[in-house]
Amino acid sequence: MTSYGSPDAIVHARTAADVAGAIHHARDTGTTLTVRSGGHSVARLSTADDGLLPAIRGLPGIGVLDRSRGPVRVGTG
Image (tube, rainbow, N blue to C red; front, side, top):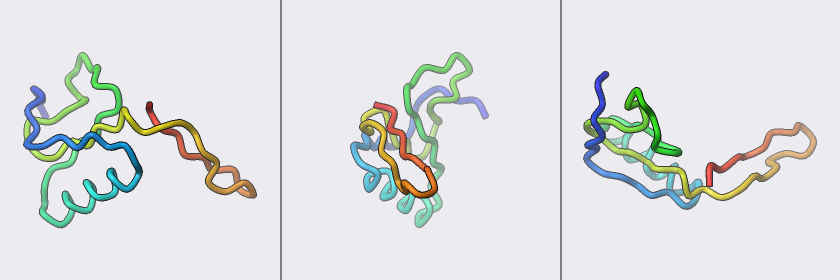
């Protein structure tokens, strides 16, 4: 896939709910979905020519999801 960075729409996600909403919309409409966290990629892999692009750079911090098992949530911001 050759990508030049022209998605149809960009979602500047600030919460997990924003990302989930973008994923559900893409699934429900058959829209291509490409996720970008930082935006720097020499190979142009951080965006797509078409479809929906949730930009997750603004997701905050780190949180423990389940202290008994140890999984964590890591934001890119």
